[in-house]
Image 1 (cartoon, helix red, strand yellow):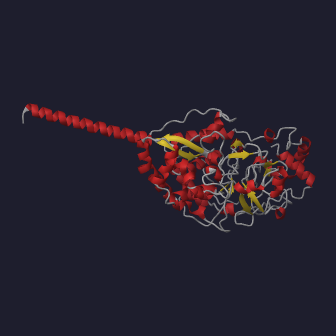
Image 2: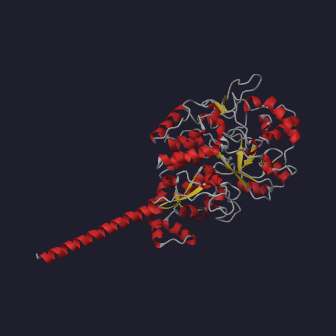
Length: 530
C-alpha cells in the first residue's frame, strides 16, 4: 500500500470516528434533553389574592415528578378519553368536569387544579403536592364563586376515586398510543419528534408504570359494607403508608380519616414529644409528618436528599406560621352570618366551663387521650370509632422508620407503639374543619353537641356551601332548603356517608351534650372566633 493510500485510509477512519463521536454525543445530548433535563420552576408571584408563598404551596413541586409524575399530555387527556371512569357523571355529557369531577379544587384561569404540579424533567410532567389534600374550598352563598384557603382541609377531594381512576385507565384497552395520540393531537401542537416519543415511549411506559403499582392499590378497590367508600374529603393515610412506604401486604384494616388542616403547625413544637400529630398521635413532630407525607407523594427515595430536605424545610417554615382562617374574613360584621359578639362572649364562658380542660389545657391539648376508660372525673370515656386505631401498629411504625432511614433521611420518626386513643385537638380555625371527629362522621359543630344517638346517621359530604347557623357545610336537605341551595346540586357532587358502616361510626365525644340550647348557640358562636 502506498503512503498516500495509507494516509487516505487514516483520514477516512478519523472522519468515521469523528462522525460516530458526534452521533454518540448528539444521542447523549438528545437523551438528556428529552428525558432528564431539569428546568427550575419559575419564581412564584402573588396571584388571585394569594401570596407568593401560597402559590408555591398550591402549585410548587415537592419532587414527585421524577418517580411518580405523569407526562403532561397524558394527564391532560385522561378525563377526555375515559369520562365513564370518573365519578358523579350522571346527567352530564361525556368529558364534562374533568378532574373537577373528583372534587379537585380548580381556580379560575389556572392551568391545573390546586395540588397538581407541572415541571419539566426532560419532558413536562404532572404530579401532586400537599395542597391537593390540604386546601379548603368554601362558598358563603350558592351564587358565589368558591374561595380557596391554603393549608385547610380539602373536604371535597375524592382521593380514593382519583386512585381508582388512574388505575382503571391503565387497565382499559383504550389506554393505547393510537387512542391517546388521537386525543392529544386535538389539543397539542407537538413536533414530529415529540409525537414519536409520546407514541412509542411515554404512553407505553406510563401504562407499565401505573400497572406495576396494581398490588399496592388493591385496598382502594374494596367494596361493600365491610369496605365502605372513603368518600369526599377522607384519606386512609396510615394504610397508604403501610402499603406504599413499607411494602406491607394488604390486611383487613380500614381507617379513613378526614383530611386535616395543617395551618399553624408551630403550635406542636412547644411540647415535644408529648404533643403528637396525626389523629391517633402516630408522629412526634411536624417536620416528621411533612417528610413522611412528601415521601408518600414521591413513592420512592428522593432523587436528591438535599433538594428534598430543602423543600421540606420551606414547607415546615411556611406551615409553621400560617395563620388559621378568620371567620370574619368570610362573614364580615353587619352581614348575614356575621358573629354576634355578645353571644360569643357568653360562649367563651361556656367553653371555659365545658371544653377548655381538653382543648385549651397545656397539659392535655395536643396529646393523646385514651379512647376507652375514664379520662376525666364525672365524664364519659372518649369512645369514638376504633377503626383508625386498629389500622396502625408498632410493627408498621418500625418498618416505616427503617424505610426512611434507608433513604438516608433523619427525622424524629413515627411513634413505635400501638395506638390507644386520639389527639385532643387544638381548635384554631375549627369553624372551617367540618365534618368533625377524626373520621368526619359528624357534619357540623351543632351536631357535635347532640348525644350520639341523636346525631344525623346519614348525610352527604363534599359540598362547599357553608352553613353559618350549624357551623358546617351543607350536608342535609334541611340545610339546603334554609340556605337556598338546590339539593340536586348537592347530589351531583357529594358522596353519601352512613354512620352504620365500618370505620364510619359517629359515637363518642359526648361532651357538652346536656347544655341548654342557648348555651350551645353561644358556644358555637364563640368557636367561630377561634
